[in-house]
Length: 612
Image (tube, rainbow, N blue to C red; front, side):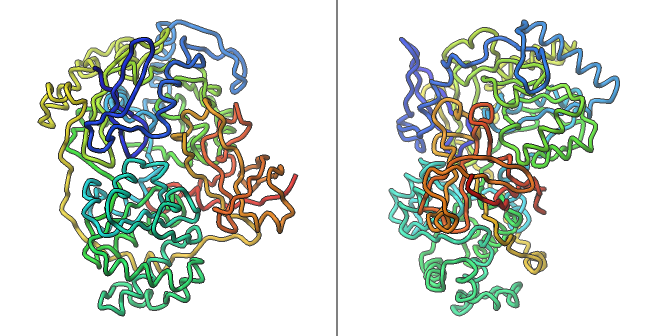
């Protein structure tokens, strides 16, 4: 029986048993220690997506104005000729740096993610600085601990307390949430929204957005009474007594006191730091301050944020010849100032997922950039492209999938052929290398050769992998290098962003989507979720149309009154398709970057709301 592996951008990286007789049927691998025989809510769309009649089957060449969706079919061979000719032309006229592979984590399978980089490293293109999601927090952790690799989640069962900070695991880490609920640990959820996770926790700390740092400093203030001193920050910590911080955070003094004492008494504890709260102007610093607190309590290893394993990424992706990085978050501004003539999009949908969409779309319309998109569907990015290559689903290629959460690598076996001329990332770039006249063996290496090399490097028994569909691999455990030297200066410059008369916009992940994936296959939640008291003050009723706007753009949508939302907050789920739903929350989000890794700060966006 073949095994599949979910390659989506998710903590859980599930192992799947797939049957393909009289239609595809899938179920969670019961032998996998994390998957444990069940799949998440999103899995219902895996098969629907693969067999959808909306899938692209033939290459499409633009035949009209950019963005209008006018295309004509062409053959894959002709499409590859066009791409290779354009690459040669761009290199001759401008240099390889003028070519940008625009990719991300829409497909995290190792070959699908890394193999195309061999081609782009071969020609010496620019690359993308992956700053959209978690890199600000990763860089912050490395700056204070020397590593962003935390604990093995299977050790959650040994914890007396588990804290989910800025994450909704009941939706986005369902297998980790199960591990937590099976433990005897006390569970805290820290989130401005009363999420499903918050409802299932022992304690929900519904702090105001962007006040994570005052919360940590007030915890340190409490701990100082019990002999846990923070000498590097004493002058700052003394200002954040629980009463003062309670007003700033909206939590009140008692909740802060109780949480601080639980951190002191319920050791060992674990803190799973999510990616949402670090997507604000001081997100990286928030992560760093939490890590500092954990060092004082002797829990510096007990965080969950990232996982790394002994995989040779240079082998997978090749050695870079060009160090020019284009920042992902403010791509529109980067394209304005840099001479990029050709963009190759795969594993991502940037005209959906990136902030400040209006600027990005305007720049793409105005500049002479040849855009190639490789995708399963006619996404909003594809609509703005010059040439579209149909992509394969993960049921249609062989690969391996690792995890940035747990310590298992999963086998993904091909169970059916791609429709029409749809093609996997690996096969596409093998054919493109041949069109370019490249004959280096590493550019033509087949899938199973790469799989064999990776499992040999990881000392995995191939027969065992084929039998079980997964293997345990060693987590990289770097030596901790504690560096607290710059934290005081950074905290002295900290302020809580605010704008009088504006709402704080939170753009969260929906229960069924992964970024923009699958959101074209079901009835997506396009409501603006607002606290009933805020709505009443504005004369807005449930279902009313509202105009939401700021300096980046404007959308019109309907309101859902939602008492799980704190006051002063508008929650809109990210990932709606403008070509289907008419708008996207990223028409409103800021492309301002934070200090750490030029990371995203979308959750520091402020908006006006008015009834239409």
